[in-house]
Image (cartoon, rainbow, N blue to C red):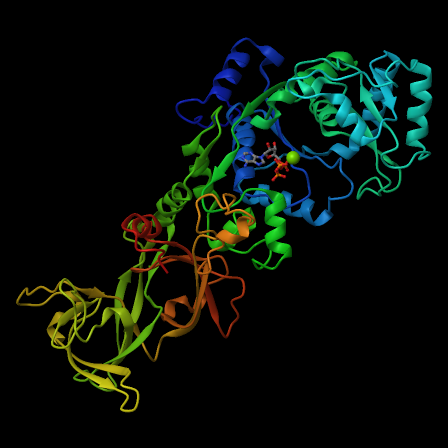
Length: 574
Ligand code: ATP
Ligand code: MG
């Protein structure tokens, strides 16, 4: 007999967080017939960032664990700030993160007719009214946390009159700000959100999807709960700032005729050090040209992280590790980089790249001898195989791997000193050739020990330094972009008086090295490919690469050098 293959549920995050515990209880009680339907509801007014990745991993992750569904809903109820460009990018970014909405792509704007009908229902029940107070007066009437609000003079209008006025609002007979539709709840409610909140406002603006059909648009608190209910969402997960809006979420659904009432559950939003997770501020960085577009590798946008060389797996591991919590906290950006390194260490091929080249001539190496060494692609992955690395008489090593007068504890190349060239031979420095006029070091002359092929000698003598290198005639030219934190201060918003987050910008956040030399196996590298440059860190091929010139982005250093330098009080690393 053929059995249908049912995929095993993915193991939930361990131990289960408070949201998963709650969902597990609901499923055990057969609430919603045991179904779990979540949603991710971005407003298409910017690009997604790592904070959204937390919400995406949570919502889509839970749906996957329960073989439920997660809807992607574009919350497009503000016609002015939303653009198709953002909608397309959101879809692409969610997919790149490894999730699929499986046909459940919705737009809040699809529900405009329904929202309108529900608003009319509230009016007819005497639970909503058209108010002509000015925005300032509405604010004043609302009261404060410690003082109750006052009733609007328009609050007692009969339902028929409200209905007629709301219809006139819809027909465009009023100017923006002239009136709003408000829910009639309680102006003395201890929760300010319940003091007759506006649920519809006038905006004479065309909408990307509904065009000129509407000039009144629903407010978030009215549209969101109804959208959730129309889609039969079971658990509506949102960030903590909506906790005080939950009574309104429930009030709307309790007072209209709708069969579904999702459970809103709030969790802490992600905050990271040395960066910003506010769409408005990210937009400012892009618009003011402080960074080079939404995919600048220094930005915490999904595009930026992707171009920087992050993998969806590393982002997923980070999200699982930080979990979800009920209290806001700030996560060190080093935690994100830790999960990145863990992932790249497993997947990245090792190669040799010289970022600051210094020429070395092996004087006793035969002029036209050619040989190649076999180098392991990734010692962490035995299946990754080996590649040939050509050797020749003239090589490049790093400038910092040679010192004419080495300090104590320096084990690399120096006059008379012997070191190992990775995968190749032992070499000894015999002479330093300088430019006569400037005194600058032009090249180093070394001898090699033909008996040390492959990195060990017959007499078993040892050296302390092992250097990476590339053969000059085979090396490829490359530009390497070294990225570092965009902001020097952990909290960029904590600025001195009169300044803002821009005062925390790190002038070293991008250092471009235009004349690097990389090993020839990289000839076939394609945009997005990831490598470990031995002794330097993780790098990936940037889309700016052309057949004539490779461009690499530094994804991460091998270790958290920033934290180390800061601890030692040495200022910031390169
Ligand atoms: P911003 O305040 O920067 O505009 P937002 O919260 O308004 O961000 P939305 O597009 O409304 O952005 O967010 C879509 C979903 O992603 C929401 O459910 C929101 O709670 C969640 N989200 C946004 N930022 C974060 C964050 N930093 N951490 C966790 N979840 C987030
Ligand atoms: Mg929002």
